[in-house]
Length: 448
Image (cartoon, rainbow, N blue to C red; front, side):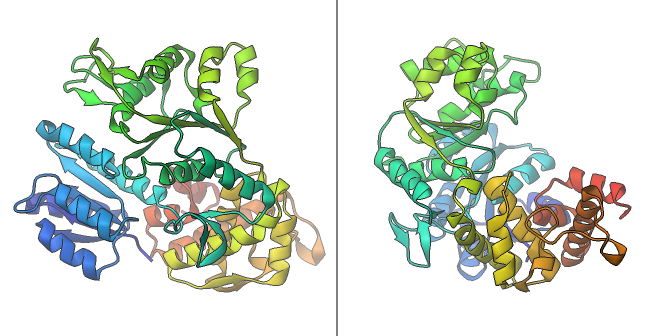
């Protein structure tokens, strides 16, 4: 099932250009020239993302944002704005908009924002605090059957409203951002912005401008003042993912924000006061990085005020079955199919070590749904190396692991391409990989 994007702009040319660009990426695109017509479409169509101009005839994009937040809180809203209304866009983000893009914008920039907005959606809308009626193993949107995860959720609930910095630790893929979002949802800041910055995904020379913003002329090509994520998160929560990868030279500036609550944009000496609750996360051993001189000791103690550790999935096997059922329901709803796991398949999932944790489990289940086409997923539908069957050649001869992986990848890619009508961008999204990686695998596996 294709994701639907609603594009709202009073300029027919912009609506058409965005419609064509997003349509080529595999999205179903609806358009509207006004907030009033957009509201009617939202009332009768299932929309996954709204992209709206800030300045509209009649009711504004901010009015549409407020309506969408009230009637469809799980639908992210991206704003298109001119330079003169950047401050309004920033305030809108503090009130719940996902992000904004400045006119004139590159279509690749908007496409990237839409993709990020879709990826940031929870698998299911969070319930009220306590057990979710639809899923007895979900606590406020977090699947927690094991005692270990229930303790994590309980601790998050205890400290959610405190202004203190939280450090979430755990292996890659355990769900650190899920707990960060839980902290935000249970805090008094829940109606303000939840802003994410991945310190490992942004080159060091760009991370400072991303966090602190930049004044006009701060660097080549900087022709406008631009607020950073710290300003955008004012009044809300800033989630600093993989803080252990933050460059050492940038760490004193973050320390000053945590100590004094002030921000200076790159190239400016004007201090701006911000009220931000910082939640940091890392899979690295920060005390070891401190000993090695790669992380400041004073910053470590500033972010380590309230530690929350998420154990790996292999240490809480009770959660595997609950997560599998919860994730299958979300995947089935998104792909428009109904899928369940056979008892042998579930037993194999419980017996797997899950080095990639919850993220690996989610990818395995999505590929299994694609391979099986829905219905009951059996052992043979599970990819080799993920609790599935041992790959064998002629007469039962065991083949190499690389050959088994290639066979599983080839089958999953073929199934994804068939389901999306050979749309590479949509197939990559289903497979949980980038389009560039998909093209690389197509060539490597001889599927071009």
